[in-house]
Length: 291
Image 1 (cartoon, helix red, strand yellow):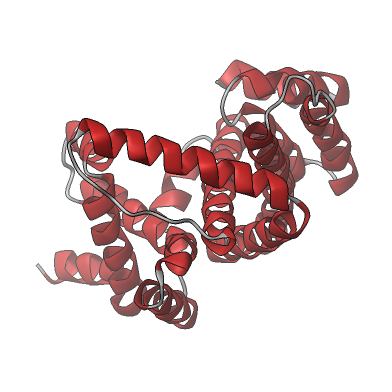
Image 2 (cartoon, rainbow, N blue to C red):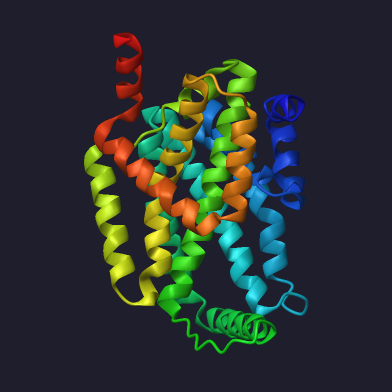
């Protein structure tokens, strides 16, 4: 990864190559755009972004090969690259992960609502495909499930996917930047990720409202929970380091997150919210000092 980051920062042409061919691997293209935005000018980042978008735009024009469902996914990939650029510029100017995460949430929501307006037919095809998939799963399990997906739910699902991809790419870009210019800095920075009290309270209130309303808003609640989720994960990393536990605990943690993604994600969102309200890191440090 160090060599790849070094290659990206060696010049515009090399960064453009990684952005162009990085689409073959998850997160690489948007992360390359994010790294350039974090370290170089916005103009350089936009130029690299165009190369990252080029193969996706080409795919959109291959209507005889690409299905309507894939069109939505391609547009979501396009949106994630733009969202990463915006969030990286916010992170660079503010040096604040909370601000960058809010930029991701807001820009992902705006992009998804725009796609909802322009991709009505494609979203309908996506809804049909999801219904068929869940019906097949229900039949295999011998269950009867009555499902329906509105355009609003699908837009929220797309927004959540765009934001999740953008956060992953932004984390990778920031890690690359630290490898090159500030070894060890990413670990310290990530361990300190914590939302502001007012922002955290607003996110939790919005999340609860979305969950209490009809299922159409469920995915939007998940979108609002992403910054708190990352804060919870950061607190777990900080606690493991603070208590000097083995790194094997983090491996077990991520295995549990994969296997129990729903329940554990809910716990992490709650943990991120509590940390924002109570500053658990400071309390741990004070207790250690007091002892």
